[in-house]
Each structure stands twice: as structure tokens, then as C-alpha cells.
Length: 264
Image (tube, rainbow, N blue to C red; front, side, top):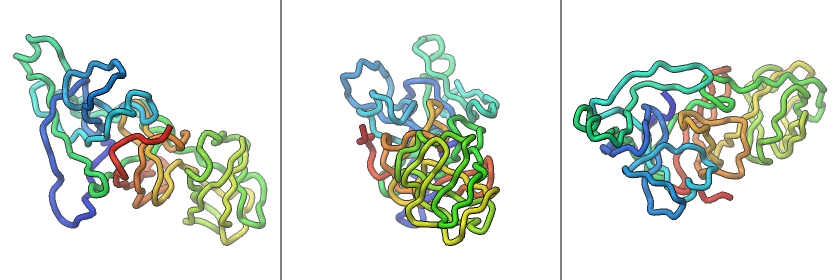
């Protein structure tokens, strides 16, 4: 599953779940936006739609609403996940055909509401698409001052300054995070140094998820965080946890800072 309910900041309690008509075919675990009047020319016809891409123009007018928690009507089918493409499960099929509505229902899902500042959401972090693990960077040049991670084979300049973290997976700094301040095609620089020198062969993972206030970016499948993408646009979120320890199992837990895409 992609996005999933992980609790709330108000203490114990069940998530708020509502039934909503879909505007396009949806899968469990996908992130949803609520309909909002707009002049972008998108005919939506229901009450929720997939949050296709965080930086797309028409999403500017729609607030994040929730997560597909289940399928309500008889259109439900199970679609097996495809590694590197998307993580799919139960599917609710959107239709505008009266015969399909009579046979299976209009296309309706259970929406786990994401209440800004309250709801905690857990989501996997991948490199662009479901199942594609973040690239491990093997340091190729020693940094006695503990501020430079070098690997010419990995292009990470698309992550905006101060919007990514470097996590050390092996070496004297193993288990530590630092905020990346600047990048080139081969070097990531941190302003606050790692406590130990960075040696040749030390391994790091860099992702566009900064603990604390950061930006939420996801692919068009709306089922994971894209950990290697520009992060100066997107939805404001507060990252309560960013875990980059195990390859292919990286994840984050966040709460929505507000419901809108306010960056440009």
C-alpha cells in the first residue's frame, strides 16, 4: 500500500472515514484531492480525484483531501502490484456509463481524511516510481571536514537546496542525517558537518524529505514520495520521521501543514 493512516497528533482515536464519489479510477493507498471550483477547464464530475502530480498547474486549486482506504461499490477489482510502475490493490472503476452504474455502482471509495496538522500519514519513499529504491551513493573523494559527499555517477542536482537530507548508511557517520545545502552534478554539500571524516567508500542516501517542515512530492500514480525530485514546489508538510536506513524500505511519516499547494 502507498499512503496509509498512521495515527493522529490528538492522541488515541480512529481515523475519520467518509464515502465519496470518484472522478477517475482509484486504487487503495492513493492520495486524493477534493473537488474545488476552478477555472482550469478540468471536468471532474465527482467529489474526489487522484492527486496526480504535486507540482501540476490544476492541483494548485485543489486541497489534499485524504487517502483511498477501500472500495465501496461492486466495481471493486484487485490489481496486482507491478514493481517499478505502481503499487496497486483494490480498484474502484470510474464510469460515466449508465449500464455500469446500474450493475456495479457509480464508483465510490472510502476516504480516510487527512486533517491538516492532525492526521499522521505514512508513505514509502522511492526514486520516481513505486518499487525503485533510492540510489545509494558511494563516496569517491575523502572529506576530512565531513561536509562533502561525492559520487560522479549519481545526478542529484534536481533536489533543491536545503530541501534534502543525506543519510550515512556505512562508515564512521553511519546512522546520522544532515541537511544538504548545495549540490552539483557530483557533490552534495552539508553546512553542519558530520562529526567524523567522510572516507572513500562510505555510503550515503539522499532524499528530498527534510525532517521538520518540508515539501511533499509524489509521482503521477500518487502512491509514494518521489525522493529525488525538485522540492521547492509542492505541498507543505511537517515530516515527523524520515527513515532511510534500509534500501527499498525507506519511508516517511508526515502531517499536512495546510491543504493547498502554495509553492510556485
